[in-house]
Structure formats: structure tokens, C-alpha cells
Amino acid sequence: MRHLLAYHCRCHLRSYRYAAPLSLFLLALLFIYAQVPNPVMGSYAFSSSFLFLIMIWVCIGVMEGEEANQDMLLSLQAGSFLRLFASKLLYAWCFSLPLAAFAVLYPALFHKFARAPEVSELAFSFGSHIVMSVLGIGIASLFNSRLISSRSISYLLLLAVIALSFSGQGILDQLPAPANGLAWLAPPAWHMVRTLTQYDGAATSVRLAAIVYPLLYGVAAAAWACKLMNNRKLDLPLK
Image 1 (tube, rainbow, N blue to C red):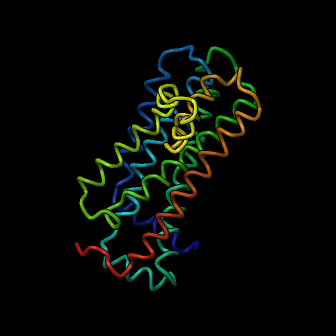
Image 2: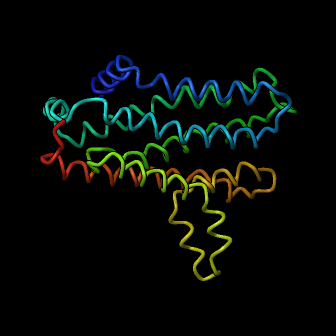
Image 3: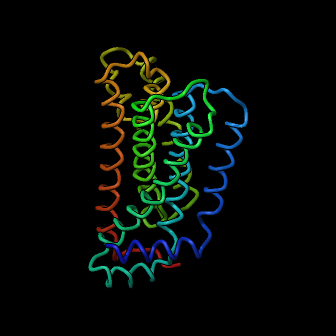
């Protein structure tokens, strides 16, 4: 797996597919924190949401970095197509780690907040960024061109899912009480945002659920994508 991750890293860096999302992420944070002071957890709610979107972009670039024929050859070297696809998702998550660290530490170290954040707030915020990265990667893995050959359709579906990811609270408010559970079928980015913005009043169980549920959702989505990709390994579109 280590050699696969190193290979994906070299290919990703050579392709410069990382340049646009990375630049956008860094510039957005620098722009947001140009004005001080800022609320602590509200700012982290924004940066974690933005990282969620950026990692969807990055993950699609990583998954589609090689031609289909190249993926088939790599799967032979990797031992299985499932191992190859999983390594791409793992590399995308590794790519998110320094971005998450920057998003949490930069405003704290350079005094961009109205007050100094507590250690518990920094720990929860870093966890929220990691979890939102996992969620974004899991969602993106289901909408790559290997599974949906039409890019226009896959991107339209992906945009619809992203919209649902942030509208879960609105759906929850509009549904009658017996049907409230349907809102939880939407990707729970909204749940993390709500918990961060209401952090001071959130119970410990609510904070824990805000970490665990998106994490499990993202991992389950990625596992499902891996299963689908493994089933279609002999039917990859030729480019």
C-alpha cells in the first residue's frame, strides 16, 4: 500500500490537478481571515464546509488521474482492482491532512479570532475537518467517470448530493415529525455545520454524534464505491 500511495502522490503532483483546489482553499482562508476578529467555531464551520467541497474536487482528480487501461495494469501490480481504488481514496484523505491542520492552526496561531480558542475547541475542530474530508471523499467516490460514464450526468448528480448535504436541517424542519428520519439519509455535512455553529450549547452526545455519523457515512459511501468499482473492473470505459 505504501508504494501505491507514493505512486499516486507522484502522479498527482506531476499532473498539477491539485493546484486549482489547493490554491482556492488557501486563498479563501486568507481572504476570510484578512478581517479580524472572527468567531472561533463559526469560522471553523466555514472552513470545514469548504474543505468538504475541496476534497470532493481533489478526490475526483485523483480517481481520474490515469486512463482506464493504465488502471487495469496498475491493478495487476497492486494485486487487485479493489486495492488500487482503495489506495486512491486513502491518498486523497492523506492529502487532506495538511489542509485540515492549516485551516485549524493558521487562524489560532496568527490571532485571527476574537479570543484564544481552547484546546478542546481546537481538537474538536481538527476532528471536524478530518471527518468532513472523509465525507467529501466518500461522496466523490460514487460519482467518478468509471461508475457513471457520462461526465455531465455524474456532475449534475454530484451537485444535487452536495446541495442535499447542506440542506438537511431545512428538510428536517419541513418534514412532519414521523418522517424526520428521512432527513438523516442526506449526507450529514449540515449536521457538522450546525454542531460547530452551536458548539457552546451542544451536549457532549451531540458533539460525538457530529463526529461519528459523518465519519461512518463517508466510510460507508467509500466502501460501497469500492464494491461497485470492483464489480465493474472488467467493464471500464476506454478513453
